[in-house]
Image 1 (tube, rainbow, N blue to C red):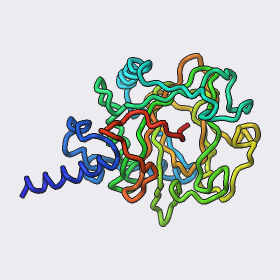
Image 2 (image 1 turned 45 degrees about the vertical axis):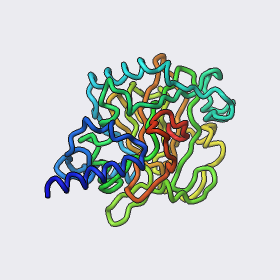
Image 3 (image 1 turned 180 degrees about the vertical axis):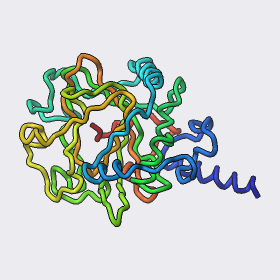
Image 4 (image 1 turned 90 degrees about the horizontal axis):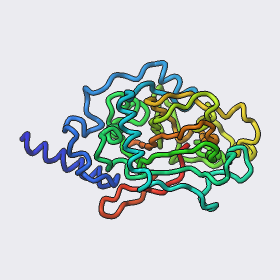
Length: 304
């Protein structure tokens, strides 16, 4: 009976991974007990403070998820793979900001840089560990429900000094159109938080005050109206566009129902984050399939 149950569980994992385009071979080194996001005994509860802040602001910062040594290892692997897989958004058709706007940056020759394939990098397990990290699983369960699934392919976002940011986007009520985004929506009913799509951003380089990078409109996951066009580009109402201060090793968890974006990068060193998106078991935003188990650069929009 034990063997039969094991085979049934393995089959379920294979089916889940096929829908998320992650080859089974990538999790073959993960212990069976950690393959199932609904399994018990691997997590503590999310604190009442963090739950309150998520409902208040639409995001939380989880401090020191990764150690300095783990971050150094992750950054080394990014550097080693940079030239092979980096894509800089220089084509005007895929730029993330309006030219000349406050978010377009001081250097028009620099765009956001995306790197895919991060789940297949064999020189570190830490990018794969985000899928079920014991410090993060409590948030996945609390904000998505047990049985959560990875949505989108994760990737690295990098910015050089002066490069453009990303105009404000997202929102339960779309920041640009004012339409209801059921596939991004945030809700909280009778004390239960749910996000149709939730972002998990692993900070790989310090982002002190004034550095630029990820920004968010706190509380906008509950907004009922679209934003003024000049706010979306960062040209007006700047006081409401907030850049959280984070350190390498922190993880920012935010609802895609919260309006967010990125400010131009102002530091002399390269900004780096690893961005993942997760959804409840019954929700699916990224509906594409990869051929031959390819888990590379998904191109994808979004992020901050």
